[in-house]
Image 1 (spheres, helix red, strand yellow):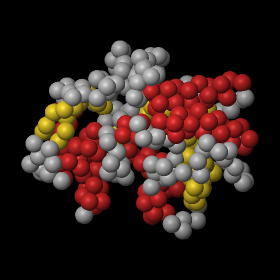
Image 2: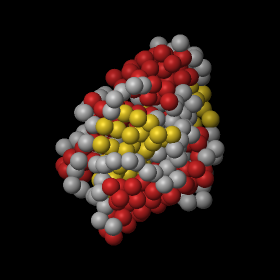
Image 3: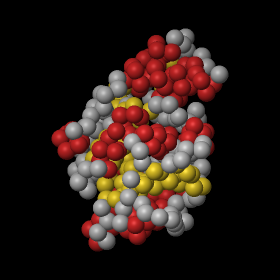
Length: 310
C-alpha cells in the first residue's frame, strides 16, 4: 500500500505515518510546516519507505507513481492559530481539500478527510451524533476553522457522489499526547506546560465546561479503521469519558506532582461548553473504541513534555 498523508509533520499526522510504516506501507508525507514540525519526523530520517515533500496543499499536489490512499490532515487546528492564520486555515479546508481530492481521483485512490467535532459548533444536542447538523457561528473567531471543515466535508461528498471517488470522513474530537506543540494553546498542553513549570494553571470560566479527551494512539487506530471501512458517511472519533476543565486541571496537577495554583479567567467567546461524541456508529460499524485511560495518556504526555523541556 502506498499512501499520501497531507499534514504528515503535524501532531496527529506524524503518529499516523509511524503506524502506517509499522504496517509495511510506503508513505509520502506532504506538509508546508506552517504549524507542523520536522522534529516530529526526525526519527524517520533515511527510512526507505518514507519521504517528506515540503509543499502547501493549496497548490496542486503531484505525486509520481501509484497511490492507493490519500489522507487529508493538513490544517492548523489550535485555537491560538485561528487569529494568526485564518486565511490559511480556510484555504486548506477548501482549495487544499479540492486539490487532494483531485489527486485521489487521478490515482483512483481512496480519500480520507480528517474533519473535526468543531463542525458541531457549540452543540445544542448532547452527546453529539453524526446526524446532528450543528450550532456554528460563521462570523465568530472560530468560524475560519469550523466552516473550513464543514466545506471540506461538502467537497468530499460532492466528489464521492459525482466523481466516483471512494471517500471517508472522520470527525476528530479533542485529542492529546506526545508531539503536541508546546505552544498549542489547547487545554491539555496548556495545563501540562504550566504544571511542569510550576506556573498557575489557567482555567477559563468557572471550569464547569467539559471536554472528552482521546489519546492519540487510539485516534490513529480509529482513523485506519475508518479508512478501510466501506462506509462513506462521517464517523465520530473520540472518547465518551467526559471531564470538566476544572477536574482536568486538578488531575494534571496531581499526576505531575506540581504545586501550582489554579487561577480563573473569563471564558473566551465561542468556546464550546460541552463536548462528547456519540460513538455508537464507530463502535458498531468499525468495532472501534478508545482503550488508553485518561490517567495513562496524561502520564505519557507529561513524560514527553518533560523530555522537551529538559
